[in-house]
Length: 304
Image (cartoon, rainbow, N blue to C red; front, side, top):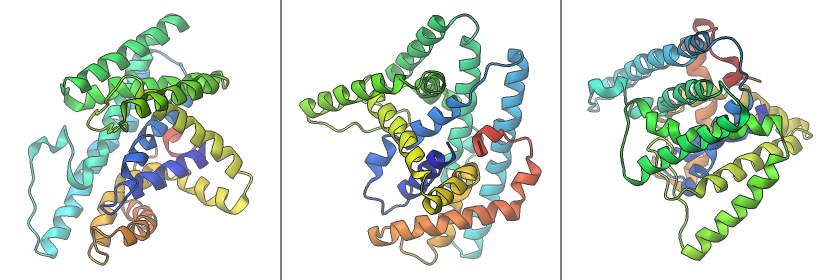
């Protein structure tokens, strides 16, 4: 799974560059992939309260830390280069700017806890409850109803988390997802539209688009197993995957430094910016000593 996360994190970084031409295609599956991978590692263990407390430690505490530190560095940078900036107290519950990406921490927290809550009876109930939460999330999307702390995004994302859990137990489920993904693509073609998905904003145009995102996410995991046979490329992507959480949290801040040198809206420079942003993100985390400070961060998110 490290290689799959490596592919995913590069697409996340590249998809967030202002000159990225492939953004609609990348957004179709890059975040569903991370929810799927997280669900792949889900294990029901201990009581519910202990599980929730562990998720608070591994997701909410680092979330608060990054909110403070990322914005402090950002404000200092803008002050030094004499650029205006604004601060809104709502950033703690709805991060923006260089901290925008931290929505994933909140959404994954809710997804993990909700999935643990509904996983108390049998498999059939778990599947039905997951689908019902997904339907509720899509309805919230269709009627443009937002819930606080990205709970609406979590309701939709839980289907990817659940699929990852079942994919880990029953790998053959991928064939059902592939077939449904093909049918969903045909449906989109006949309608003459392209599925525009933004998980942070909980933007989904249709109930069936989940199958396209799911099938591409699983294909990425399957592709990663083939890439694993290539020592050089596999090694690089595996390293990125093991450090994906650190790259994920600081790459938007890394962009701010790189945009002092590279043009922001350049298509030609977008890949170069993404490539430089990755080591710079790791350097920022090393300077901040994140791994030492938060040794309790959920290792299933950071490394397999």
